[in-house]
Figure (tube, rainbow, N blue to C red):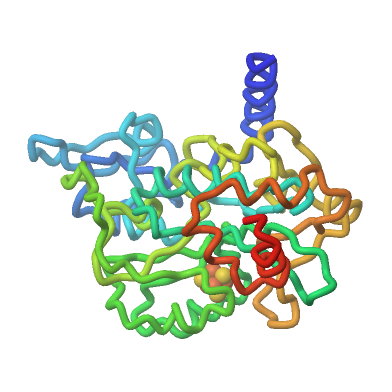
Length: 330
Ligand code: SF4
């Protein structure tokens, strides 16, 4: 049964690739090779396959190679300059199905592992929402919304945070001065300050890329990045591919396709059929993350409390949790 599920997941992932969703890898430059050729790498997207470019080899030689061959270099890496452009012809979008979430927290853990984060650092936060005493509470996974009109980008005094053509909002830690204007301007509290990781990144010699936020810089700001390095490699973001419930769909608005790895559907139809909405629409930030309401739930809310005490503590202000505590149920 497990194998069947895995095969199905793999097939659907292949469909994701067949749709051409992740074919835009022309900005990829050679990872450990390119270190100081930022401007050249930035122009790779405009170059044709017949053009040549110069790269530094690991033993320090400057060599000229066809631009086309960069796309196939195994240790592909995108420079800060190239990463500002984004993957051509894509408009990435995420849809989170609240009816399926049971606070399994696999998305949080996979994201932390993939981004080399400590336990207390979360790019994906799972909140417990209850609008009022009578309302029904529900689990609410919250990444960065990669807004169309991102206030975080507007307030950044150094251009360290930027919006790409493919919808992704990133941070270049080599430009970030740690002023935290973006942290306070984000109405969704999606950003956090790097006070210093306990777990140090092992490959210290790896060239920095905003697409991975690695190696991370202490004293700068970090956040959910939609995992552009995985998208270039033809994979779903860590959160989407790790969720055992299929809560998180990811895809391309241009192609009108999203997938959770199990199911590949039309984005517009999904939003229409399931009453999709964006969080705090009235703020005018135009998020690129949509939610499907928590109706006809697949899992009872109670199952989501099988988590660490420290996590439950975060939900203590929610009326439902206060009630459970009074009754001695948690
Ligand atoms: Fe910026 Fe916050 Fe919008 Fe993310 S959710 S793009 S950090 S304003």
